[in-house]
Length: 112
Image (tube, rainbow, N blue to C red; front, side, top):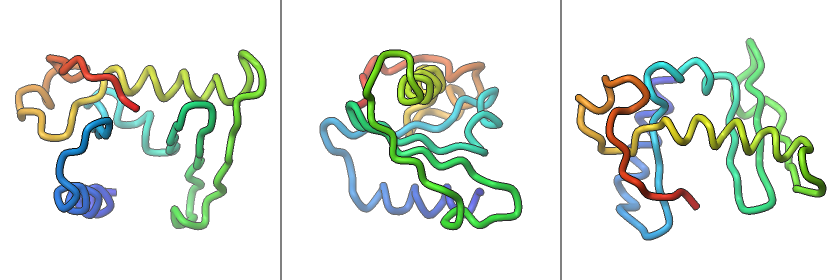
C-alpha cells in the first residue's frame, strides 16, 4: 500500500494544484476504514472497488453506481465516503496535523 501511495503522490505533484481538485489522506484513526474499499464519487455517480483478499487491486470488481432513489446503495457509499472525507487531511498538511486525532485543523474546502 505504501508504494501505491508514493506513486500517487508523485503523479499528483506533477499535476500541481487545480481549482476544484482536492486530495486527502485518511486521518490516522480512519486508515483501516479505507484499506478495503475505494470510493470515487462524481455528482450522482460513483465508482466503488471492494478490495478482495489475495487479489491484486486491478483484479478486484469495480461497481459503477448511479443514484436512482434516496437511501439506496449510491447514498450508502456516498455517506461512507463523506464521513471519512470530513476527517481526512489535505495532501501537504503539516506533520503535526497528520498526527492529530481526525486530522487536526481543517482547511474548510469542499471537495468536488
